Amino acid sequence: MKSVGFLKTLGSVVAMVVACNVYAQASDATTTGTTAAPAASAKASKKANSQLGRKVRSAISKTQGVDVSNISVRARGGAVTLTGSVPDQGQIDAAGEAAKGVPGVTSVSNKLNVMQQ
Image (cartoon, rainbow, N blue to C red; front, side, top):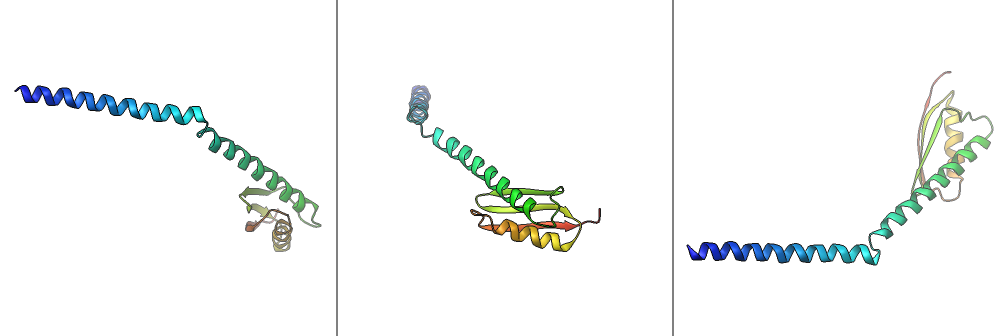
């Protein structure tokens, strides 16, 4: 019976030591700033993606004969996705070519559809 009590006490002490050690490691990570770096990196990445998307949309809007009113542009790490609808196939091709010509674009996924307006 004494051994059961001893094991319970020993288990409690071990649990307490492990909990304190885990807490200390988590506190050290936040004070050295290691958790802030991914957040800053994600923010910078989001900003770069937004800027690239705006550049692509601007390039498409400057393309002769392309109606950008129903085109959505999404950029992620250089990969650009075009979605929406345009009146004819020629505009789909022109929009894709314009997007490929923007500096920073690594690939274009052209998911535009032909829809008579």
